[in-house]
Length: 295
Image (cartoon, rainbow, N blue to C red; front, side, top):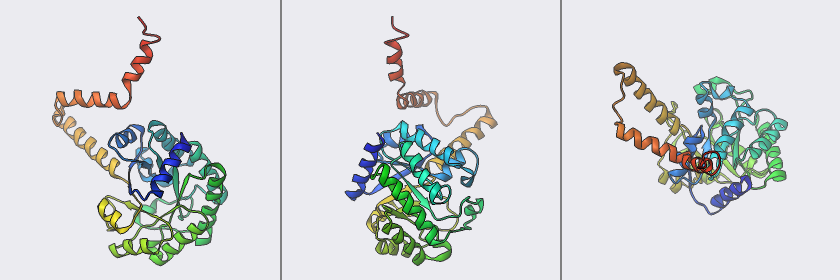
C-alpha cells in the first residue's frame, strides 16, 4: 500500500495537478478529508503536538511516526508528514526516513531548524543551522529514500526567510534540489516574495497556509496559489482550529445551561450515523454476523 501511494502522489505532482492538503492529527479527521474529495492529506507537527496538549518541539520521532502511520492506515489517499528537523543529524535523519516509509507515509518534509527544536519557534525566533549541515541532512534523506522507495517524497523546508531573507532561503532550496530533494517549502514574508520564490526555485514549491499566524505572513486562495505556480498547498492548522472552536463553544453552552442546543436531536442522530458510516461500522457488523453472531 505504501508503494502504491507514493506512486500515486508522485504521478499527481508530475501531472502538475495542484494539490491542497488539509492537515489532520487523527484517523477520523483523515477519513473526513478523504470523504470530502481531497487527493491527499498531511500530518503536521504543530497539530500533532497540540493534540497531545504539548508543543511540537517536544514531539519525539516515535510519537510523530505513530500519529502519522495511524492516519495513513485509515485512508487510501497519500499522506505526507512533518518530520521536523529530521530528529537529529544526518545519521538520525536517515533513520527518520526509514521509519516514515515503514509507517506507510508517502513523503515528509525536513527543515533547517536547530535540533532539538525550541518552543520559541512559535514566537518567530528561528534558530537555523548552517546551509551545509541542512544539505547534508537532505542528501542522506534522499539516499535512504532511493534505497527503500524512490517514489517517497522528500521536501526540503527552510525557515530562513524570516531572519536571513528570501535569497538565502532560495539558495538552500536549490542546493537541496541538487542532492535529490523533490520539492521545496519556504515561508515568504510578502506577496512579492511568494511570487519571486516560484520563479527562482529549481523544484516545485509547497505553500503553507498558516491560518492564525501572528507574523502577518500572507494567505492566498487556492486559485491564487495555483496561478502563481505553486504545486501544493498545505493547510496547516485548519482542522485543529475548526475542531477546537466547535468543541469550546459546545462545552461553554453545556456548562452554562446543561444542554447543547446548536444541534437538534435529529441532527445528532444523523451525525452519529455519518460517524458510524465513516468508521465502517456496518462492515464490522457483517463480520460478526458471519461468525460470533451467526444465527
